Image 1 (cartoon, helix red, strand yellow):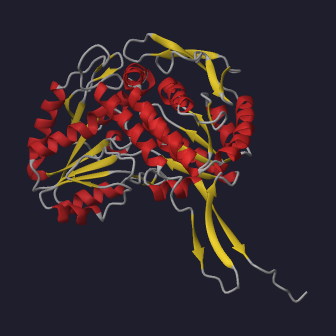
Image 2: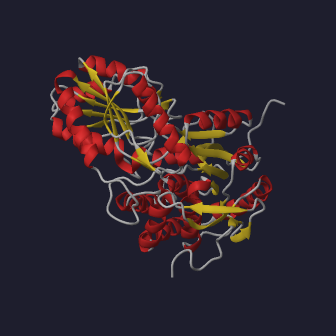
Image 3: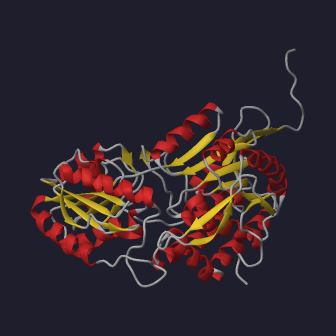
Length: 487
């Protein structure tokens, strides 16, 4: 039996351990490639949030009190379930998200690894002994934050949900998950079902799809202590402001406009292979997507010609119907934004070397040459399959241009001299650097996050970042005899 065959999930939300009717009604889950309806999802309301947060706070205390081995076992079983139900989950990922099968498989691999990595957290040391000038035992202990709100986006819903949900649960927190309504089956229902089947106690994870009113209710609810948000910089700024007003920590993984620097000693064919993957994988709908190609002058013409040829040969179509390199973008609004940025950039002088057209939600992989620095395709995050290419005269100019934008998420540098590449990278503020690779990489045990307008730093991935993100520090002292004070 599949994960979705054993429960009545359609038009419901997952609240306090049950699949309950949604106060906000329901809506159609639409397949981007065909426009067909895949099912119905329930919509939560702020009232649902209030009830879920209260029950989550109660469930969290019992969950945190369990032996660390019990929490670890749930996370290990969850990792196994991602693998056991790979075909079912992958099918939903392909159809609901528009992911090609390779991307869907990668998401499942990362989801399982996130759970296995999180399973190691409950058994880690949770504090340290401190020296004290008093005759007492002094220690600092990491304790669960309490209730964590996770707000995840549409583009890679499995990874961008589970990488907060899994470590937050492992460290003894309860989680309220708000997936993007466009991909709430893959990013919400299936994730909730995995942990339900893994034996997570009722109320510890609740799934509440909804709009901005639900997001605001999550952030302002007094039971919620930490907000983990992945999404656009514009929305992240508003969430950070609201969280700050309510004195809550907000971990923000936001947009990017990541640069790939092709230095003058690079191999053009190798660079083009990296560039195509970095810009066109998953239709460019990844925060780490290569958004700016800064190519040394002596390689520039060959690079543009070969990248354009590669883009022109890539098959685009329904990933559920045949083998393609690119599937559909998520919806018409996203497609129209991509096309506007492309056409405005061409109007400012960029040369369309390949692509720039679409059919339905299928946008052709696009190469823009001679892109002015003021063109929106260079200066803004496109979030689509567009490779803007700009000529640079030196590594110094490339570093200067890469550092000039407001974002600071990922960086790729292609060069035969890796130490030179590392030296160039030191001049460009980003949270992630890949020498001789493109900008899109992810591993469960590696810290992930950006700087500047790309977010509040590495708050995901790796034990240290996860402990910092989802626990609080408590100072504790113990004395054998009470001290005597002067009055």
